[in-house]
Length: 105
Image 1 (cartoon, rainbow, N blue to C red):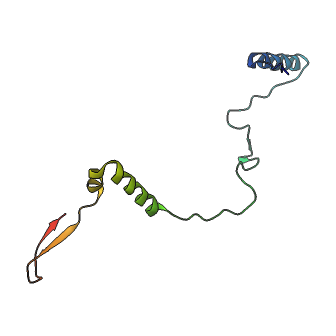
Image 2: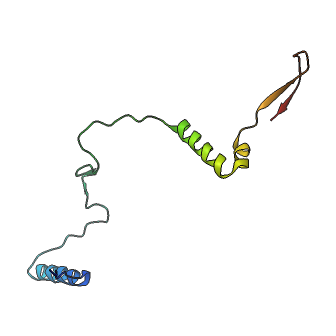
């Protein structure tokens, strides 16, 4: 079964002919500024993504994402992970457990 679909150009021409006929019969087309067609008195007519349920609280997962990224970087570029770490202070002790000096690692 073959469907006879109109092309975009045919649809556009048909709509233009209907608008011209409307204007010739005394109709008037209001010019609405761009971006106001979906707005009624400053508010949206209906929220786009609202199903009536209260907003759910979100669980922050920044640390989990950082861990995942660190694993990925460690696999892809092993030397880069050491560059991304913050320098840490390391204390050097003598044989008797007394601190000798501090170095940055």
